[in-house]
Length: 284
Image 1 (cartoon, rainbow, N blue to C red):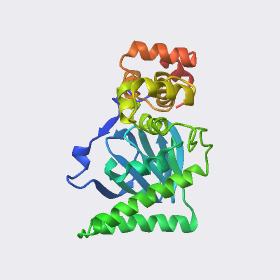
Image 2 (spheres, one colour):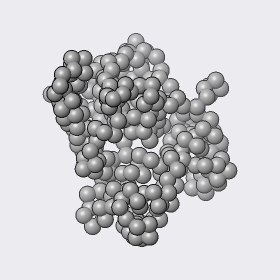
Image 3 (cartoon, rainbow, N blue to C red):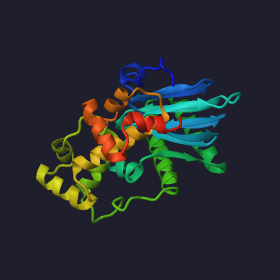
Image 4 (tube, rainbow, N blue to C red):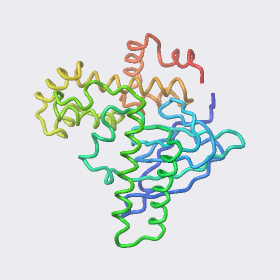
């Protein structure tokens, strides 16, 4: 365990986004391990060449040419290149301006991890879309905004479609019997569970009264709102405990818990081990 590592770095909009532009694109070469960090913005990436491991919310995913992934402000990640195979990556960062409300369900509903491998012609096409965004960004014209907006939306949809092919979609996803407000809330929770999140706030976001939203959520999802949020936080904390060297206190607050004692009690009640003992039992 690396005793000198003090918590995850937080990459801010102020440092990486140039106002008023809502996006930036980079061509990045990764030759050494990029430590666990998170961002205020969204990041979508495409591996042009090389090989390594992408550790997303504590889950290691081998990556090579053609791999693409999307990170939201709720995600932590780490990138470890293989020795002698540096990773060459397009990194596209953007604010939520690029994700229209009506597009949200198509991208996020039922998908908790956006990571997939594009092969052959698909891979070539995705790379060309990134290349076009790069060219527009470095030769900006009055109509470039429309090309970039459309390109990012296409990349988001292609990525989510590919991810859906490889996973079992929850019963609530796409189910018209589930109240539209509840479906909207699940996507909102997915992106905000690490922050202070109240029933009243989410109900208001969905345009519903607090009592009605609470009743609908419990009936349609099978558990109360507060329990669902706590489960999301505990699963997130479990991943970080098992696969990172982050201090337990940092993991507690990064997962959305307000106090360390409460986090430790909730974790032990859920997994029958304290956070410290669970980490000792895991292989990092």
